Image (cartoon, one colour):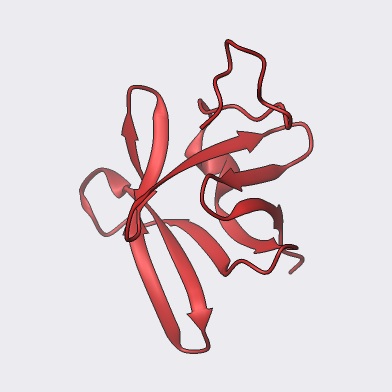
Length: 103
């Protein structure tokens, strides 16, 4: 993973962002699975989840967690999240860049 202090972040993405900014559907132009980020208001504190669509009808849901200002999900390994607010690009360390899906 890149470090914001060393300047090796080519997208200008930040690891510190509001989860409400990334809720919605996201698509990869690189062939990675579609994702959806949503808030589960039925759970205590309304935690956020990321849903992966690998095949039609086959969904994986993972809670989005935070450790020392790094947001991540654990789907058969830890994937960190970063978000560029200027270009509205979400980046997953294992799958690359995601763009907001058109509704």
